[in-house]
Length: 210
Image (cartoon, rainbow, N blue to C red; front, side):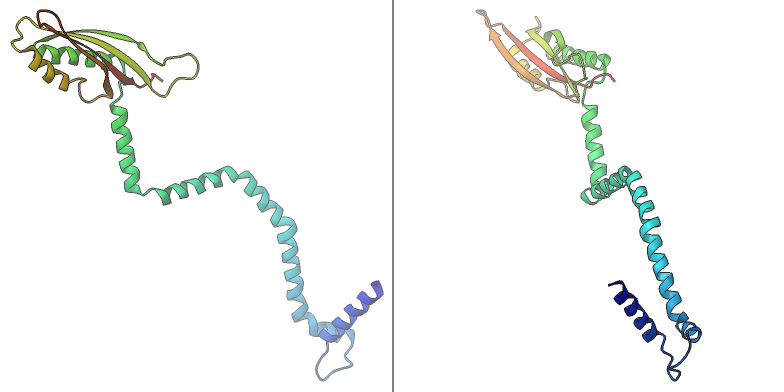
């Protein structure tokens, strides 16, 4: 087998180095004639070997080392395709608006209670408010949002000439606008002398302190 390979290589070399018009040229002459063909082939073989055994492993190692950055870049490119700049700006504006509707601090919460009292006083009602503890505050990992209830009782002021009509107008104003809140319970009562009273609960959404 080895002899056949050597013989085939010699035959191939003889065929490639045949000099037209000089069939009996010696090895030196044949070699000089074949150099323009052999040297580029040798260069290509050396380049292929360098790419396969030197550059290839180095590039693979670089890819593995920078794989997290490449994955992040691909995710950013995918997001850019899914969301235009205008859509991203609209989304950021909507997020900021929603964040601004959350109760940010105790002072912010107290201002909401004062707004309820002021609205009730303007409608000739007296509001008694009681804020409960946070609904979902628990030890461990902090919640994304917190909730706090305010129990309110309304009674008409002595100078209220139309308790029922003013109560309807007051309930339309509660809870005060601008914050994420909702009335979760409402009860209206009238005693034997037709004196009205109302009880309701307002649930506020708070941003946890960081």
